[in-house]
Amino acid sequence: MSETIPFAAETDRARAAQKAWGRLPVRKRLAPLRELRHRLVEGADALCAAVGRDVGKEPHETLAAELLPLADTARFLEREAERVLRPRRVPTSQRPWWLTGQSDTVYRRPRGVVGIVGTWNYPLLLNGAQALHALAAGNAVLWKPSEVAPASAAALADLLHGVGFSADLFQVLPATRDAGARLTDAAIDHLVFTGSAAVGRLVAKRLGERLVSSSLELSGCDAMFVLDDADLDLASRAAWFGCVLNNGQTCLGVRRVFVHKAVYEPFCDKLRALAKDAPPRRLALAAQVEQARRLVRDALADGGRLLVGRPDGPDDSFPPTVVLDATPTAAMCREASFAPLMAVMAVESLEAAFEMDAACPYALGASIFTKSVAKVGPLATLLRAGSVAINDVIAPTGHPSTPFGGTGDSGWGHTRGEEGLLEMTTPQVVSLRTDRFRPHYDLADPAAGAKQGDLLGGLLQATHARTLWQRLAGWWRFVRAFWWSR
Image (tube, rainbow, N blue to C red):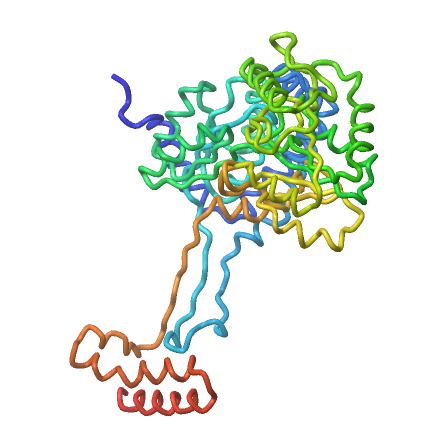
């Protein structure tokens, strides 16, 4: 007979392990991280080989995009987690007068059992960073790896178990699609999900029915803005890098490029030179190839023209493809895709580009290329994207001290950085009083409570009235009422 609650035995073991783990001082929970960094160095070749077997990633790309950022994530937690999770004493200067005598401390409690539905495109970094933040915060983890990256999943599990995270504290579930849905229905306390917006909506609905919190990273359709004073060599190289990194299988991949009309043609010429001899790229899933072809056909039918690439080819690969003069409402400018695919559009101004960007429901990352950094910096905050890079793409989001997450169809919540660590906890306020004066208890007695009117009214007037004279009068009213209440 099938189990009523999925993964009940696994969750019970995780919860038992978490009780002991969560009681440990933070510094003891961080002890395995130094060893983990050392083993990333010693096992780099084997880890690169595992990722290569799964998704065809070259070793140098795995080193740059996975091992180095993962090691730096571990170092960030080593150095900062104890400070971030330390109990915070609320200053008495922030305490309202009507709570005089009370002291408050905010603690960060682990959520408990955190489920992680893993991804395959960066199987070591994304899964590893999420797990390390959850474990450092005092949680147990039930991890459902992607079925697309079994060798990487085995390597990461061996790594975490080998440095001291026990098999009950960090559990690896079956790498099947069904297991992801079952984990959503399990008796967990929080879920971290990385995947598509369509599946993310289903996950959010199922969790919402049980009031289980979540962090959803649901990919993106990132925009680049090239201003008329941009370094075009730098901007064109950035656009090409953002298009083809990891064969285009990157949630932060550059998909839409808005170029000021004054530099549109020179930018396209430089991009053409970079892309003209690019070979087809193998993609992990046939559905990605089918979607990319559909998006290109749609864009061309809507008036776009090919700079490089073609809408057909071998079933398991897709050539890097750049479409010029696409419309911001075209499907390729509104859908998240995992292929080396990019649309380039001419714009009159940055403001016009921002308006065109708003037609896309995704808001994960964005970039702006310009020499007028002082002027553009404040404008970057007008974008909806969770991460905005000026004169760079993708790489800045690997900073271990900064949060990662988006809005709109890109999901909610954050992983990494202080915000990602805090998201693996819930705040708990402990309030303390040592005196015996409790005038608010009189509010339960209608007769006695009525006598508190002058005291409460005086306090309100004393602390919030418009003029100094009114506030002084309020204090007199309060003191008089306080004396009589004593």
